[in-house]
Image (tube, rainbow, N blue to C red):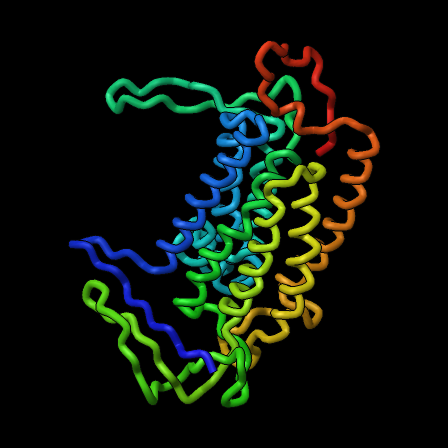
Length: 323
């Protein structure tokens, strides 16, 4: 049985740093850095990628909280509609995925340009205008998703150390169960700020879904990283992540707790995430067909966001792509 890991908050003066936030921030920073590095290696326009990432992250964090409130905490949302804007009150992974997709779709058609300046503050506000030619999302989405599982390892590590996805009860001694409950034995690892990093063996074993997904994500991230040196068809990583993640997450959600007040709601006996897994799997199948069409056409959408090689003029009329 896996011990329950207790990680205390890190206090630096008046500032309190939570382990979940630190790990998520680490994942975002590392993911953006590796994505930028891979884009440079492929000769893609890094400025466009950074813009793409900005729209994606803003949409992801907004969608992660707002859709979490709507689909998982509807009674609370009805009582406190303003909770939709209290971004610190919770996130859902699929809400983040949907929000990120909305963000990059807006990026496809709109761009941020310098707007009015505020002299007293020394800043310039952005304004947004419609692009003359829609940008293809697929090349940058493929770069991001080739790296995303690496960043997701840190996100699910955060879930694992704060234990915010407790699953169903398990038999004592189960290989993948975590020792929740009242600690019968505690092993101190080291002191962190005003608390101790501890391993605790409790008397109420449960599955920890954050930990189970972390294990799966480590495997997926490792397999994708082994392909980074290869030139795969644009969109291949979108297909791979969708078709791999959807069935695994769908199956794991059957282990979620049902008999507590905080249990996830069910719609037609399935959780919101499971319905999203069905949609994600169908999307993966659609993208597999789209990737085959791109290969057959001989036109790579990466050409539209690639920097011209030395001595080469950029194309005057970039071709349009629906993705």
